Image 1 (cartoon, rainbow, N blue to C red):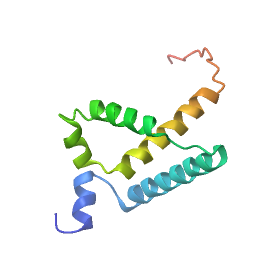
Image 2: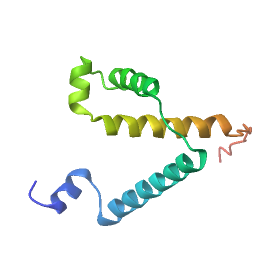
Image 3: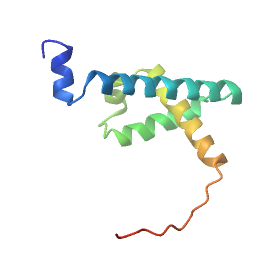
Image 4: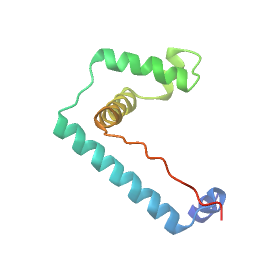
Length: 105
């Protein structure tokens, strides 16, 4: 791929699509960081180790060494902390299921 247009074409994306993705990603990061700061969330070494085991399974890594050669400690810690935020949101969510009727017209 020679330039950005080739990448967009390969991904079947337009400039607008990419801009929307960047904005959504930035917004998500800002919200997650605000929650981390507001709730004073941190991860322990145990959280980190459990995260390694979980993500090794998710990525089907053959060994701890392979996994740690692919992902840095900072990347793992960041993901574990983001997961902690998402779990906090899920735990605190007040979810109400509503039956809806669908029009088959």
